[in-house]
Amino acid sequence: MLSRRSAPFQRYVYRDDLFPTVVFRRAYDALQTPHRGTKGDLDYLRILHLAATTMESEVEAALHLLLEENARIDVDTVKALVAPKMSPPVASLPAPSVDLHAYDRLLEVLT
Image 1 (cartoon, helix red, strand yellow):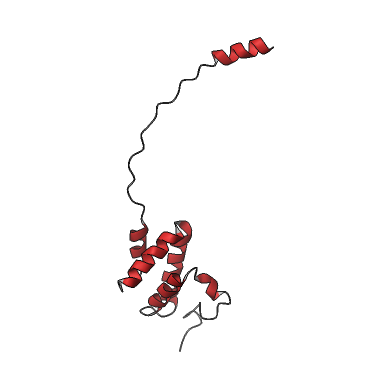
Image 2: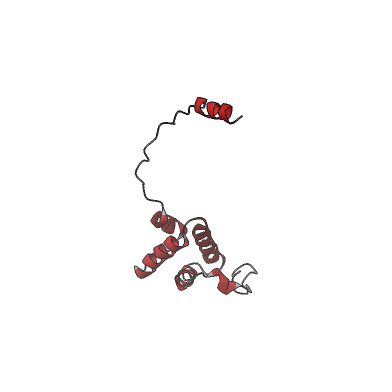
């Protein structure tokens, strides 16, 4: 017997809105194969959260790559593919010295 929480997305009214693109839908279907119900839904929600907090297009590209390779899809694998690359160090600039005496002299002239 299935519990009420076994497949929360089954009867969700706005279910189609949970799939921004076809790739996300295919990823959801792939997650449902090994983890039918709540486990697959929870994994998919974590991937959606990753897409919302990073770049959705990068998450989509990672999912597409995993689907093409028939690789296991999980949030940790997608995170590893989306992780920001090491950027070159930013050069530090010295703080400029500000001479306010010129401004004070300008105020004296104007008053």
